[in-house]
Image (tube, rainbow, N blue to C red):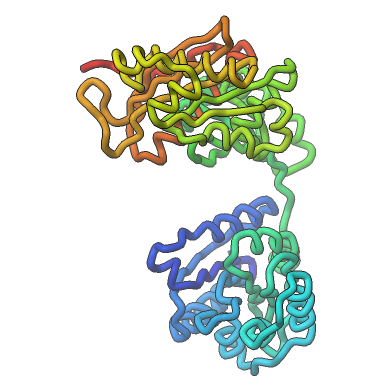
Length: 428
């Protein structure tokens, strides 16, 4: 690939080098460009060191047709991008009238006074062409350096995201671009290798020209079906049909759908309501449900009963069950579920009680042990699982499994999915 077709990234900030901030912006930029068939050829990350920034920018400008700089546009002394770009471009810094107007409008909307620190964000290279920031105070800008287009962007992820459409247009105009037609499917409870093996076994049925991609996350796995021509959209649909045949009960939705939204859709379709009774997850399941727009149509009340006394007082869990079996037990989660369904007048619910760790475990109930009870007043089940890992991972997975078990019951899918076997408690 010629130099002029290359796109490079320069990430700046001491917080990136120290590990205080994890770089997610380069992924955002690469994904947005990738949807236009534009690849990133190189990435450099440096701290707030003017000499290093100048050297890195000069290196990338020699190698690429476009360099995108992320970070360093703010109002503080360690925001060095404008100064560095001006020096490498051989230009003076000057107050940009349109950047000042942007700052004035931004401050006015928020009832803030425009001060000298904010005005630093309008002190830009003389030839700067502004890149609109519809959210934040710091505008981006573009300059030419020896035939290379340098585009600067803010480090705040939400601001960068809002600016990416214009940035991608500018990059595409310089290096050329195409269109990628992507279908995103959200899945839960199945891994990349398992899906790939299932697809490989049906390779003769996989449509030509459709690329299957994966993006792992916790707790979901995103599948991407990509084609590079509108004429292949029907082939992409065929690939989706095949995936539905192979892993249909694990596909929870599309685009950015989450498990809670998948459950909400299922509940709404049948006119049902849901409740939660949580101990070890501390309200996370209810939070995930209510995070989704429209949740008030399916969720009326949830209960966080962390202490034994609150399990008794709020959910009417019998004291004898707590004394005889302990809070992390089948009788207790069944009573929690029964109490929550009654108190909330809900149709279906989930109850969880476990040992999230890192301490508090015992020989018969080690850290990672959790009991879940789910279902309706007349059709419910309970299971003991062992989920290893950190406290955060434990809580995320317990919440996700709880949502999925309810989704499966409402949709009449296999009640105990195969992924549960990985977590079923086995007494060694």
